[in-house]
Image (cartoon, rainbow, N blue to C red):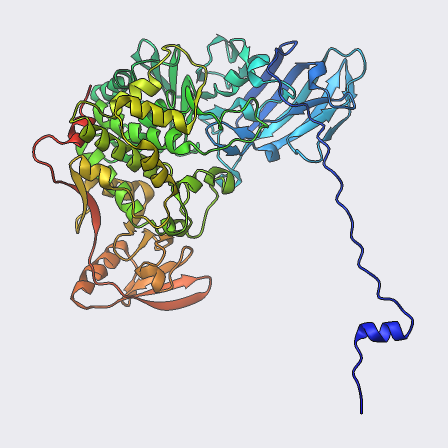
Amino acid sequence: MFRTLSLTALLLASGTALAENTKPQPLPIVETIPAARDTPYPGTLKLEVDATDLDRNVFRVVETIPVAAGARDPNGDMVLLFPKWLPGNHSPTGQIDKLAGLRFTAGGQTLAWKRDPVDMFAFHVRVPAGVKAIEARFEYLSPTESNQGRVVMTPALLNLQWNLTSLYPAGYFTRQIPIEARARYPEGWTAASGLPATREGAVYRYQRTDYETLVDSPVFAGAHYKRVPLSPRVNLNIFADNDKELAAKDDQLAAHVRLAEQAVKTFGAQHYDTYEFLFAISDEMAGIGLEHHRSSENGVRSGYFTDWATSTPARNLLPHEFTHSWNGKFRRGADLYTPDYRTPMRNSLLWVYEGQTQFWGYVLGARSGLVSKQDTLDAYASIMASLDIQYGRQWRPLADTTNEPIISQRRPEPWRNWQRPEDYYNEGLLVWMEVDAILRRESKGAKSIDDFARAFFGVRDGDWGELTYRFEDVVSTLNAIQPYDWHKLLTERLDAVGAPAPLKGFEGNGYRLIFTEEATPFFKAGEKAGKNSNLSYSIGLTVSGSGDVTSVIWNGPAFKAGIDVGDSIESVNGFAFSADRLKEAITAAKSGTPIVVTTKKGDRLTDRRIDYQGGLRYPRLEKIAQGEAGLDRLLAPR
């Protein structure tokens, strides 16, 4: 009889003990970077940026930084920071990877430096005794192609963001750090910023300010430029690839004038001394929409003025970013405000910051006539429809989407309809529409969300600091306007999982979502701008003109057929792909003709049958109220 002995028994029998695996302990992380303190910085930073290298897209920086005891680490080294957590981005998106050639000197002597081993955005600089100031030199290597990031410099225009071209000392609130900046632009160019400047040829010397305000005051500069005053305190600074794109008609500019008027009438105060729209119309410099207190960065493709009939979707940009001067810059969620650009942001109130800004952006577009009322209704229909088929709501509450800027930082995602990124924008709009409908209903028409706008944003006229708030402040402001269980309503909308999209606000304000076989002009303009065919509400995909599938609705007909983003549709029912042919096949399927497409991924071709017989479906709004409805009153000029 044989017995099987365990390995342990055999080792013990042989006199060899089984060794225990080694178990190290982690090295502790020791914080060596001074925490920000709300105390004045002893000295003024001086920043010089050379933005003339259009051939290589390089910004060259020279910065003089006075030495301060409060900015030293425990070893006595000076700690300098590159901005990491950026306002408006709501995330740690500072482009430290594009900083190069960093060197520090004092009195002609090169100073040794080390990057912090934990915070890669921090530099510890060895400063000899007696040194009063150090000089930093480096280059910001802005992208030369879009796959490297946002292109901000072209032969005709550029976008200078000070957070990309400067360092600041640790240990102080950024609002307590004085700075003087100047920049050199290409000869013959004009620059505009929310921060006043004096011009000496190609050099602009900017008004002495604090570092927080400087970062909040980016610059657009270019060879093709037009300045349009919209009010005594608001200006539209238009930059373009060529002079043709600057050719705005009087009625087009008049709509922008009304935008400035309607915003002030709506909010009842102005939180800026002057406000500068920095507006680029370009196919070369990448687009942008980024809010600042006394300005905004706005970038659209060519045709904004010259192809006015189809540029409608792009005309929501300026009203949205302008609204942020009140909502997001002046009124800001308490957990989002930070003393410097190293402290992490918390985004729990982005459904107010961005959601209500999305709401007012569409309202102001309609009130000013920048976008027609009908186009605004059609835009609402597209928003409602997209959220109505947002399958990600089955697992992810709206409140959690406010974390998305930190989680994904807007990187491409494979299944957006299931992942549910950044719904706090458009679903936030739906929530605030419901708030408006309830205010009107409960007050019998005496109150509306306009009353909230004036009470919440229209205080402290002329103050362009930051007035922070919490969830409870939103609720108490609403209750002061019209008593209701606002806490319960907002909590349910934020935390619910599996609930349908909150479309009741539109229905309460007199309109409902329907679908027809013909797309609205606004929907068609969106397809033209995106160079695609949006078939999300029929077979559940969006496809480019060349057949590339750019989005797929989770659990929709195309999804069930095995189609995903990255596929290319090569043929439809045996014929070469075209968007019209695919639409014809969708219509023919109503009578039983199958939809068979051949997709390509890599070298693999696959025939896929899409099981769908519902025909083409495009969203639009249908009025269900008699006479003037709440939504009609909301969109009417003030």
